[in-house]
Amino acid sequence: MKVNILTRTDKRMSFVVDGIDVETANALRRIMLTEVPAMAIHEVLFIENSTPLYDEIIAHRLGLIPLTSDLDSYVLSEQCKCEGAGCERCQVGIQCSVAAKDANRNVYTSDLVSLDPKIRPVSDKIMITKMSKGSKLLFEAYARLGLGKDHAKYQAATKATYKYYPEITINQAALKDYEYKGDNENDPLVTMCPRNVLKWEKNELVVTDLMRCNLCGTCMRGLETPKGAVVVKAVPGKFIFFLESSGSMPPDRIMREGIKIFQEKVGRFGDLVKELIEKQGRAG
Image (cartoon, rainbow, N blue to C red; front, side, top):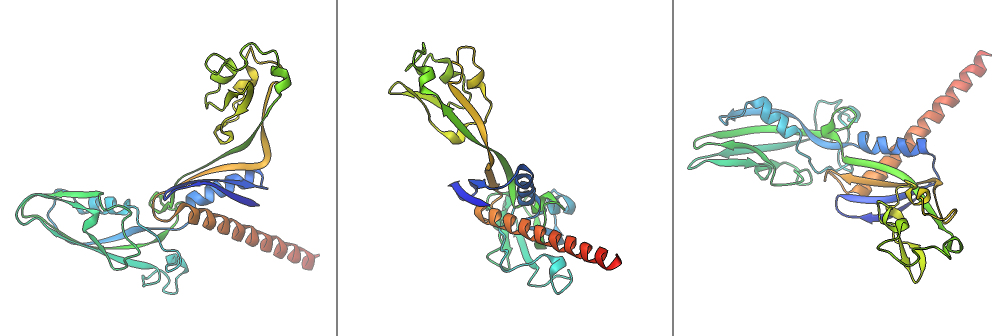
């Protein structure tokens, strides 16, 4: 398996994976969506709440606030030595103490105070509730790592998709006497492509951006397309992935964790198969 990053920002990235089949590509996609751990609030203890919203509604909103995650400092509660009781290795406290003394005000994620600065809301501008003059909101919340397959609030990735890597072959000889040669405005070959992948340069048909091709094959099926002029096909074993993070961690970390988890699963499966063969051998 070879991985090549194409584009990367703070929350989005695209990359090419070569040397896998479609089943492996889909397994990686599902793992990045549902099995890369992420932090989220799972328990809230309300001390005082005189806002218009019930405790349960505020708790639900708090649970859906994406938090930054630190996979190097925290572990899943079921893997912790405390056995899920809650300790500094699997849980972090978040506090809120707001009083609308003189006027109405809103409560935002900027009002949340984490006991660990590395674990905090990805945005300070998410509104939690409104408060009228004289209202108070005081609570303690606890966040822990979880998996997206258990609850969507634990999804580190909000988007993980892939497509086949395209290959476009252009036969310039077949276009030698083409009626629209060199005409980017009226040529059906150029205008029929929904992703604007083809264009004329110096009387030759060229590919502007291979990564934009979605393998629809429209350019091959055009009534005025010369036979064999354009051939579009997928490269076997090569895929383009698109990944978007909730902000809990950089997208490249999600990718690396997803590949790591996949390799661990394959390793465990191999051990189970070996163990089964050994048992059958002893039984025989």
